[in-house]
Amino acid sequence: MDVLCKILSIPATLLAKVPGIGPIVKVCCTSVGQKILMALTGLSLCGFLVAHLAGNLNLFAGEEAFNGYAEKLHSLGPLLAMAETGLFGMFVLHIGLAVSTTAMSRRARTNQYEEKNSKQQGFILPNGGASNLMLVTGLIIFAYLVLHIIDMKLNLRGFESGDNKFQLVRNVLRNPMNGVFYVVAILALGVHLTHGVTSACQTLGISHPRWNKLIRILGVLFAWKIAIGFISLVVWAYATI
Amino acid sequence: MSSESLNLTLRIWRQDGPNAKGGFRDYKLNGVSTHMSFLEMLDVLNEQLIEAGEESVAFDHDCREGICGACSLMIDGKAHGPDQATTTCQLHMRRFHDGDTITIEPWRASAFPVLRDLVVDRSAFDRIIQAGGYVSVNTGNAPDGNAIPVPGTVQETAMDAAACIGCGACVAACKNASAMLFVSAKVSQLAVLPQGKAERGERVLSMVAQMDEEGFGHCTNTSECEAACPAEISVDNIARLNREYVRASLVSGK
Ligand code: HEM
Ligand code: FES
Image (cartoon, rainbow over all chains, first blue to last red; front, side):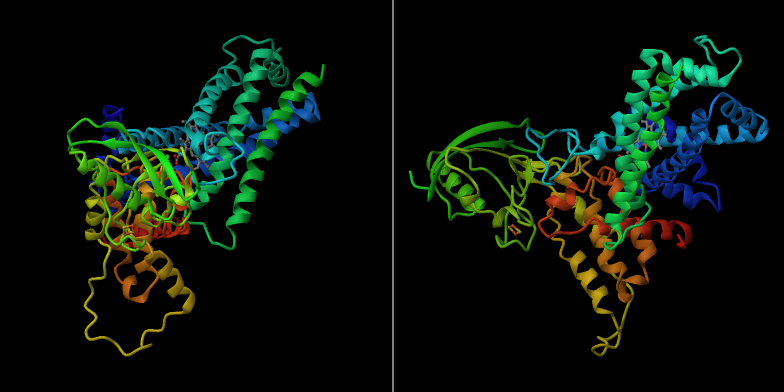
């Protein structure tokens, strides 16, 4: 892990020497700077989720509407390619920073407590709430992402599609293994964002005693609206013939 | 046995020195008065150990009234024990029950190496303060009272942050051993006041750099530090540190 971090930090150390942007790159390498970048990439990915879900809800409008949407999206050509590259970059950054900050914190406590208990109360989720499940849920999302691209974008496993995105999506989701895994992964996403959205606000300094409760409520609502939205698509695949 | 007196089993971390291998030792302690503080209870244990010709248990303490930040201790997995807003020296034995086994450990963080038994080296905090937790601009003679107007709410914010006693419970309680609550309190208490504003950019950059240098972890915003803090420092200070940091990294002269 340490060696990996050293290698990963080489580009940053070089960039830090460039006049003008150097100081900014340098602060991006600190724990606080990395966390700010994580929050920015995380929130951008939330933006992607909204767009992706909005597009996919076209499935409910039927075969024609959805295929029309898919065609329009692909007719964007280079624009789409640029967006996809950007998206890929966001994921790489977000995950890279997750690994880097987690490694930093593992090193910060090498001798564990014999007994450790929380002084906070009222967690619904086990293990001290969503904030302690970020890496696990993140890794589940990542595994899901890989499978998602293999099936939905590249169709490497050869699902029946008749050259039609609508049929492909439905057939992929109707595979029971896929269906279960998709639901689990989306639940993981819901947990990730339950902490993620509020946390990102705090990381970016968006906090005020008067507004914090509201930010928390909106963050959790957002997380589960997204999650329920995506799960509804899986349900749809089984409910329609 | 009346509820005025407890028979306890203490599981205490013993370690001879910084590089020695430590381990837990069990001690029976009978007839502990519920009126004692936790540290007085350890005093009684140490008297017994000394009488028996054994090494006493080393632990940090000074004021014993919750203001110096010297006492520490992870008690049954909770920094400063089970009570909110309480230091170990203010914790009373009436919080425990007859027959309890109490696990007592030192703060655990790479930046806080164990010196002996329950005593850890917290000089990493001193070095973070040395990196920028002060005002160095020369202000000349003491100004007239109220010559620098500071609104009451701002004073309150600064005072709330200044309540930090630097005990390290935030680091001890954090799953990442992060020092963000401590550093954010020290940044905030100066950043909101006119006297501290002049150096706010340099200060936050230097203190965060030192915090990383000392090997503390990053902040996941779990708020466990806030719950463990005997001085009730709010995580709102961490948001302020983040704000100060963004601002400083974009526009500070460094
Ligand atoms: C659509 C996908 C994802 C979205 C929308 C997302 C969003 C977020 C957001 C908003 C945060 C909060 C940032 C902060 O606390 O300041 C966060 C944190 C985090 N994310 Fe993600 N994330 C996604 C995927 C992933 C993946 C694939 C990983 C893989 C490991 C991951 C790992 C983490 C970790 C470990 C944290 C917590 C950082 C910490 O300890 O403070 N995330 N994410
Ligand atoms: S001994 Fe001073 S705060 Fe506990």
